[in-house]
Length: 322
Ligand code: HEM
Image (cartoon, rainbow, N blue to C red; front, side):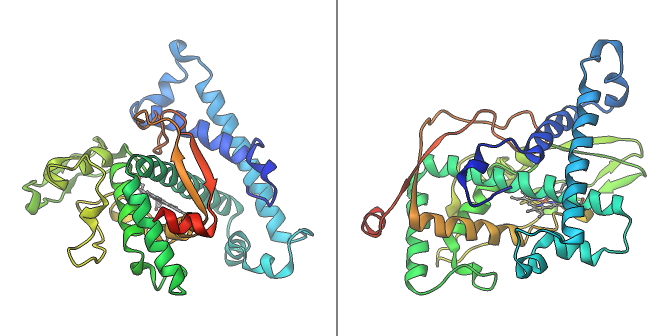
């Protein structure tokens, strides 16, 4: 999606547009187990199903084109080294024997799971940091000190970015990737007890449609204390300055069980790699401080646009900001 020239930021993009609409329609379906019937019923002949199907087909066509382009690798604008190292080419080569529909569906899942959540976690961080500028300052100070010590973020040294990690985990605790979610029980089951929260086992009968909210769980004072609804990255830093990684069952941002997010370990790394260099070069200021909430989408997009002013910093200004 991103190229060297800024014009690409203004262009319409089939992936962004289709995923956004599919996201909104899927959110409506989550709370309506009868959607397959009601979307066809007289009252709801509002084009929802047609719109969903048309978006899916546009998305599939675009993904199939992407796969074809990378499979025969005739891309003249990409140098040979990049062709071998890009993620999609490796994925396709690793699955050369697979059914093309399987590969296409993997790509769609990765686009949906990977792009939206990453983008949203960055947006919510900008939102929280513009309301809590002391944490933006602390992140920048950390980025600068580590940079001056000759360090750049790598997977191995990630834990030295204590403030960055604390801000990331606190952002996605308050604004988790999927604020609401659902499962349909295909067999009788039992949700395990959580003794330290005094929660007993919960039997779930076959055929039950279970809805829950990661967002409500992690803002509950019984789970995260009296200040559960406050943005306080300090809760993930120990008194001696070490990062305390939030864990299940209290921290459910990446889900739990067999569908646990496969990117849960890479995402904090990706997030630090984005923020640390940005803070050494730019300052960010929220333009409109009005409170935001999640929109009516499946993933956690803001209900209204959040505009920020970005200002580039020279070396002198950088030192003055911390
Ligand atoms: C802040 C970033 C992210 C958050 C908060 C997040 C959150 C989640 C959650 C809650 C689930 C479980 C969904 C469920 O149980 O219904 C999930 C699944 C998944 N995530 Fe992530 N995710 C993030 C980033 C990513 C990235 C970057 C990728 C890929 C590059 C990714 C790929 C996936 C995939 C493929 C699944 C489906 C796993 C399965 O169903 O077996 N996610 N994610």
